[in-house]
Image (cartoon, rainbow, N blue to C red; front, side):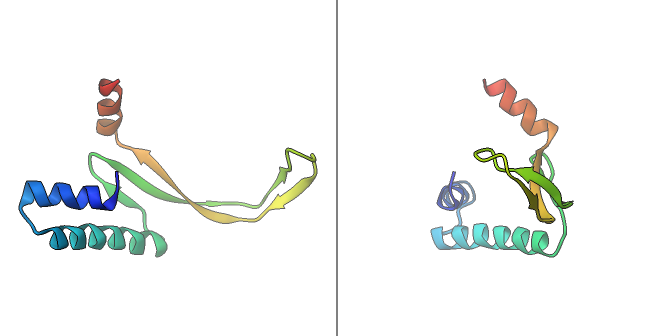
Length: 93
């Protein structure tokens, strides 16, 4: 699914123009990006949560050569699906 697909759905179901629909999608995504970049988690009820997590420095290994290399500390984003979304996905299969 793409931004254009989302905008098209808004256009069909809500009656907004194509440009208004695309602006709405862009605005929602920009708000989510701003929140995540400022360190906030984003929770969409019934869909899931985008959660930020800080990872400590650790030792990794190059699988090809076996050489140990340090992996720098970093912040990662994970997505946790809501129970409603999990149930819907498992019912679809």
